[in-house]
Image (cartoon, rainbow, N blue to C red; front, side, top):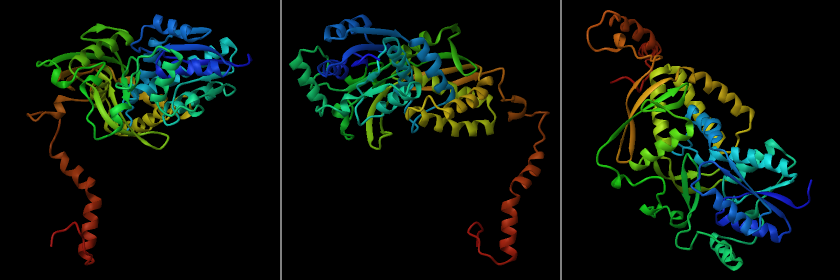
Length: 408
């Protein structure tokens, strides 16, 4: 292993720009690695900035297709939503980035990987858990846990001193993470939960008030739980998600402002924009209701909660996650069909669906006259279904036992 050679997870933002210089001052040869998962950056400029700041090499790794097909779609199929709100945009990307960083470390014969995650956040766990799972011999360097800087204000002052070009300012100091699935905003005035987030925070979407006054209807086609077409046009995952982000963003869909429980024990506040992802989750859930039986849906809801926690906690490369994937994939064999979505003023909801695997049978469900269902059969079912309650009531009455369920 080369001594003092480190692979830096690099974005060109405030934190990693300062970290690159800080590592060099510590005597490291720094190789920057920017993994493109759909963030809104010009990669040529990121590369140029890395070299200008002192990196000896800079890898720009195109990973959008892999990100969508191997990380986003499994989460979508699982219905993974953390604490009923968060669609896990940052959590989806971290194991993929960790995987690419380890690969580059092997290529460069480096024995260390550095990242810009703070000691208060979840991402340090996600990155390092992934790195440890893939190569436990690699050392992880987290400058936020080592250096003397206490705040992003300190980083800005250091960057100005060292003449490091940055875009963050003391006035607009949000910490952002973006990929093809979402963008997150934390810090700044969001750190007071009584502050209403300002409209200019939006990047991927408009506000509901600024959205069109007319609704828009779109058809999303799924094949075994994976979205494959929009309005009848076949599209690959990246193109489809980009288009849904555009449409959903126009209608103000998918912005949430939440307090969440971080893995490290504290609560945090974030504003998340996930326009395309929100549309897909609602459409996918609606199609499942059409094709999955009651017991499978019920159990899958439990799996969804656990799956979301696993992803949030950075436990992607684990046997439990693999086992849950096997269950989820089994349920998705019949999640094929089309869902019509209505988008309007910040909302996205299904209005129609169809599938060859539909368990909805008009002959049985109709309120009109039918020849397939004898309504008198329900009496016997009710007698058996309610038998435990009936026996309990009889026992209380015969033995003079007070019951809170009976009227005086």
